[in-house]
Length: 509
Image 1 (spheres, rainbow, N blue to C red):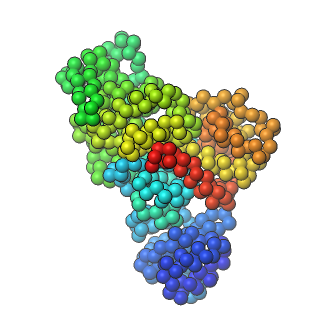
Image 2: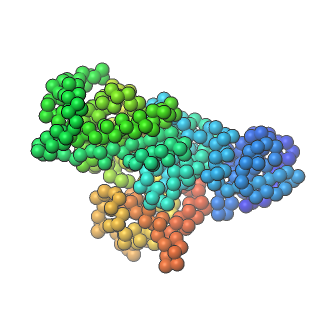
Image 3: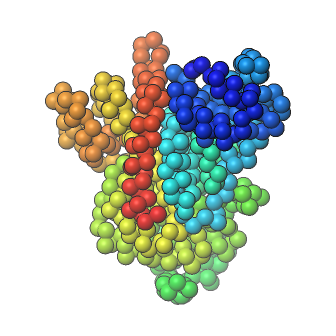
């Protein structure tokens, strides 16, 4: 850590926060993040960058915040100083005394953007970008159980990383925390207990993937529903035309009703159960997203309405719905499909969402540049977009630029373990189309992150790379990845602002 004695002298001299921030800005060698300077009950707090990590420093033992933080105490310039780790426990103290660092409901915000931070170090860059786009609210802590498992993190740690970023950047516009793609009741309960303000319910395990020509299976599943459920569905839907206030008309033939009930009724029941048990008691502070996108086929607009109509009729407060769109939204690459067909169907999905008053949610939204102008124009900004892996790929770009030798090792390991990673993600990457590393100079490596096959290779192997161990049980890559990103923090910020900024600009946000 840099010698901070002259900065402590400024505090001892009674300089106010504005003057301290100016001093920190004028002396960047101190490693102080100027925006992180805050005061609570007479204690001055700030974050500082050391050679290997970031720390929180509390100065002046004039209030309870100093006592409640855990760290090493000493005396500097006649002042009590405590240097603290950026732990979960210390983040809870910060959340207590600085309420703006707590996640909040974004239900009243028209435009929201999820930025899943798999490593826990991207949020400062995201926040600097979102300060330039004040009409868009970020969802910083956004992780699925699959991502937590692959990265070796947990809900508490993911939220704590977001808290520290918000404190570091003094971001006061509000951010969300999303327990993403949750399927198990225990995971929903855990996320809510940790203070998450959004639950994305993954209904995929309750959806039967059927084609219209599978009549025998459709009949079997439909007839397996309780008679009272079938009677209610037939009375509400069969032979009915619904004229939405947004101008869309949807008609349910008896055959269409049977098909949709056979595919989606269990998912509808599951979503209602989860809302009643977990969301309804906290619906004033928790946003509820229903995901029906993890399916074998695109979501027909009639199916979207079938699910939404029942949820709304049951009193479920839906903040966003994620259908599966036509074409392919594969990880880390642009949209694959007919943009005109996407636009035609997206119009209908948007009209359904607008009719009920919730947002359409775009999953796997990373790098879908071909359809972003359509989404932005048709949604009129009333939309939620989720990204995750693309932020990891921007971190990899930093590694390529700063430590190409490390990247070469990671790339080779990823190729060796690609088939294992495909168990978790569907991609179309072909390793045969990736140039051999031995044929590339270091200055040619950045081009790999502009090609679909190599992007997807690195995109889906992040967990294996982070978990890889050598013969002595030591991490092969994790520590070096974090060290590289720490040492090149401003480059990562620059890359994130440019890349995620491109997303926001093409969306018109």
